[in-house]
Image (cartoon, rainbow, N blue to C red; front, side, top):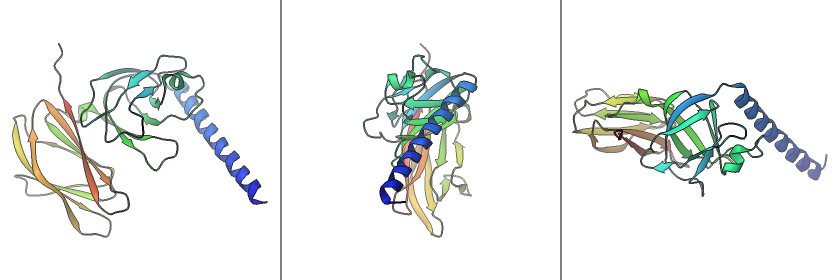
Length: 239
């Protein structure tokens, strides 16, 4: 087989795989019962010009506008639709039946209150974001949720505690320091595979019963270092 034929064959296979993925996702959406959820969204960065996304709620149904914000979580967004959430670039793409383009982001959902974190995905050719969902009830106001998305082990030492807390890759730990406002000394280190402890941050965290904070850890591309990202949710009283 010559090179032109090989390239043509590869292109045809990519189209076939893309079509199969879209059909599989559509069938999964139609076969799963609708759920009702309250979503709060935030982003660690904005992928390209994708400041606003459209969340599909079903074939021909009005999509939900979603605008992930940096540093803080949005107000709750009401959602009723498939348990597999697909986010598209335009409202027309999100309503199409069947969808004609791949979603920019997808994530499995559960009913209830959820916090969604959008992380730009520079490694994907079709996906703009990876999305991570956390049940809001597992992460109460007044606490800090440390989530490790890196390949390193994270060690956290908090003021007054004799033993470090170890957070392995793809794991999390919720720190609760009591309801009153206070300043808590925190020391964070990372251990990459085959490497020594490396101090990431030594600082004071301010606690408040009316906010909760996610502390996220990611690999820095091309290095064995780890970076931290913070997202805050402030409690808003009902009017």
